[in-house]
Length: 401
Image (tube, rainbow, N blue to C red):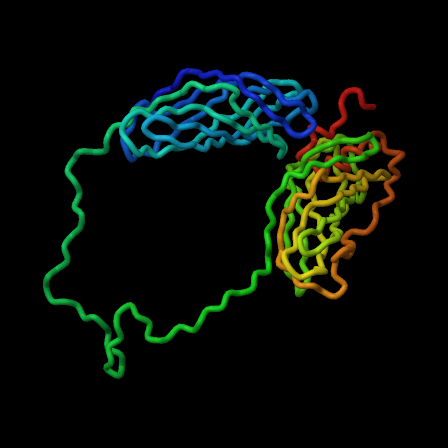
């Protein structure tokens, strides 16, 4: 029987690195770890990490709505058993105002005990995810253990049987007669299998890369980092591309009319191939009301290879047309999301552009000048829509009119 115990509070100096564009923070983390006081070898015990205080506050930029923040972290096990214990919280929190204390959910994890003696649990680094952006926090000092589990040996009771001997009676038949009378050995196929052939792979999933953008918008230069993934589906000798922005959603700061926002990108080719591939997303089909979430659209296009070999694809220059404005975002470096084994196609991309067919047409005539506050969406409905994970960087501050 395990005996539950609540450990004493542990405090430690912490260095936190927020998303790009926000200064790092040094603060104090206060943690309480709950784990069984005693358990047996072979037990899997549950551990709870409670944040008494997070090291950093919500930056004085944007209010965080309820249920928008997710903590994850790591406990270090030491003593007779060492290793990392992954801890995961839930996206459950009250609304957190600008500059307010970060209120984080409890994190939970489990540990299987493998040896008798004392196992000490010490809080280590943790990550705070808000709107798809991540603040990484790590200890600046040696941290004291927050909980100790005393592990005893396993059960010393009557051992269980290691197996029941089979009967020594009449042996069973070693095969079932076929209709001709020739026995077929048990477990052996009576026919020779045909060689298997693997189907050609047609779908290719890229890795998510954190792209640091510098954006020229109607409100000046802004910087942000956004997680981007490029996927491909083979279509003959070409590939249908889908570019996905893995940041979450943001809430619209003003009413946005239907058909007023259009994103596109030039995917950069490398490796065997060179040039770019044009991909674009659909116009927003419906009006977006103030305070409603803005979802991140996928960008689609067709890549026609211009070379044979290993060709790479990386997120490139991003263009957002919003109402009567344009925002152009340039990545700081080329980060490969997907590598494809390509064969050269006539009229392919090598050195030039592999273009796609437009999926949505031009921007609607919305009469932007007549909509109060819509000019400001040159910033928000532009970069922040697609770089939704970077809203902390992109939303204007108090001094912005």
